[in-house]
Length: 390
Ligand code: EPS
Image (cartoon, rainbow, N blue to C red):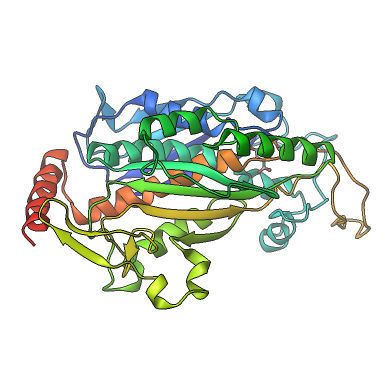
């Protein structure tokens, strides 16, 4: 499968066209909308989220809840567009009093994008670079994860750190007494934390930083359960699953680092404390008692949960901005106050979940290819037999 997206932060809508989705998958629009609503939540979001109430529209490729095999067109309308119609008009001449954006914000795409695309109104950069674009990626992921769920693959996320507040003893969904309870608790937490104590400290941290006119980043963790052994491949570099997932994670706005399993800690420990010993039993087949690899060995799933962590930088639009230079006057400028989010780490966790869902669904359909869900189910069953008899 492949997809293209288009749309600006304050344009009329965001659009995606997905091509290559096999036929006869049952798709639930409420599930896509549920993913969109999860992305809008979280302690520390700014005023824009009060304007938007994201809902997906499907205009092709699905009929009576099932994919037809034709390209799928997904759209999300920007409610804020009514306030921007004049300033973001596609045709005609700009209004005389239109305010050009000539003050690049450190940490944004503004300055490098302006130079690269030779734009003197930096709005032409920031509109597309904006994290508003993650809305449509979540809608696409919301579709992709429904394919994965039909084959028992589930994706979870939680927040491990916000600024200086760190979850010291993280519990993953498969380690909790009750996975559904874990998922509900995290979902209800304004900072996606399973631990009520850490949750409170994280919220206090966001409030404190916001009051200082600053912003704060953090660390998220994505957990994928139920992926069969052998997704991705070692045979050629571009087939390695970890490299594909890392691309998906790093493509999300403001993500600056990604790691799998032990991640950077592999550089600190001897091999005997990094690699996961292999065991076998009649009922479980091959298994490991540890998961330092984060579920991926040799660029392939090994049957253990996939564990990915990502670090998000603080949002660069600050109420108390850093020094910068106006591109027209070449003079340093004074702070200008912009609408901003003090913290979008919980939302980023939802975005990364869905970006990863798309990539994983693609790898799944590479391995179990077919034009219809019926063909794919046959292949999955045949492969399960091969695994059981290995
Ligand atoms: C964003 C700036 C803010 C955020 C926006 C991302 O938008 P605005 O400039 O309209 O206040 O709210 O995020 C979203 C709109 C969203 O849906 O997540 C930016 O500059 O990246």
